[in-house]
Length: 64
Image (cartoon, rainbow, N blue to C red; front, side, top):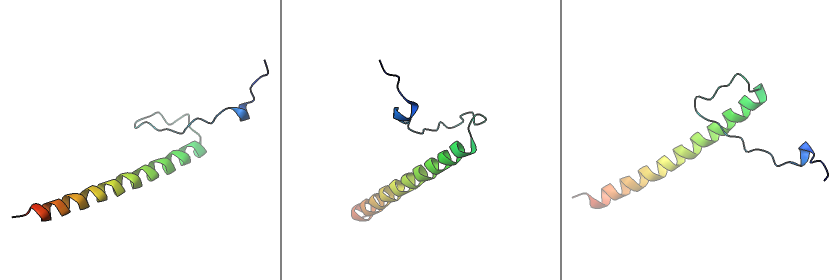
């Protein structure tokens, strides 16, 4: 059976757990996580804005 090269293995998806120990991460890994978290914040804010717009529209519609 041929040995599997490290380059041929699928890359692990970067994940971050809030409160995770950071001392063993490199500067590059920390930068990747900052980018990941900023992207997630943007996604959350966009979803919040969509929901707020829907709520505002419903409030206007059902206002007496």
